[in-house]
Amino acid sequence: MGFYSDVVLPRLCDLSMRNERLRPYRERVIGSAEGRVLEIGVGSGLNLPFYGPSVREVLALEPAPELLAMARRAPDPGIPVSFIQASAESIPLDDKSVDTVVTTWTLCTIPDAATAIAEMRRVLKPGGKLLFVEHGLAPDAGVRWWQDRLTPIWRRVSGGCHLNRPIRSMIEGGGFSVERVVTGYMPGPRPMTFMYDGSARPE
Image (cartoon, rainbow, N blue to C red; front, side):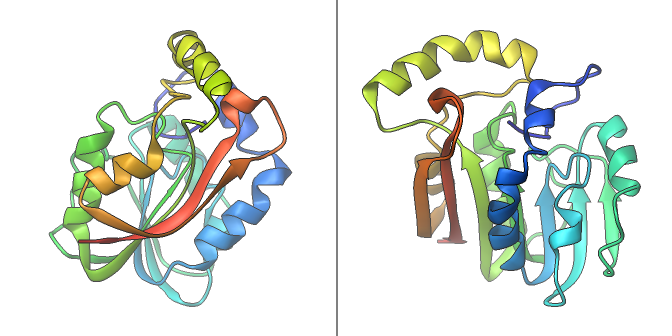
């Protein structure tokens, strides 16, 4: 379920991200962004209309040129947006240069997620925040069994998406302190719909 990877054919995850049931997640996460914002994996630009007046600038990072071209055609959010074709594992920004990092359904697809999270921490200012909504590893043993077994096949048809990444522990392992996280299933197949919705600060 992410926008991060470059896939030529339409992928299941990209289509599912257009689901209207995800709108409240977008509104909550994007609505909390402030200042100079780095969005990791902007994809086709679905988040851009949700940025509000507390945001001074959006730096829209995306490695896939096809998706960046789509994002450039997204509705104008009324604030400056700079599109950056680059990998989250090597963010071309100075240390401590952004106020907020936003990631929505993106950590599932980044090949080296640990390096990407370390990069997010590097570019955040002291006191800055990471806002995230991601799907990932479920707490129920039966669901986790399916996530582990489906992920090798699912990755091939959904742009590298992993169903079984432990989102909270990944973020904490990257040097962040999670200050808020709400978890739970949204409607849909359980192996694909366990959500982590929260915020974290660099330690």
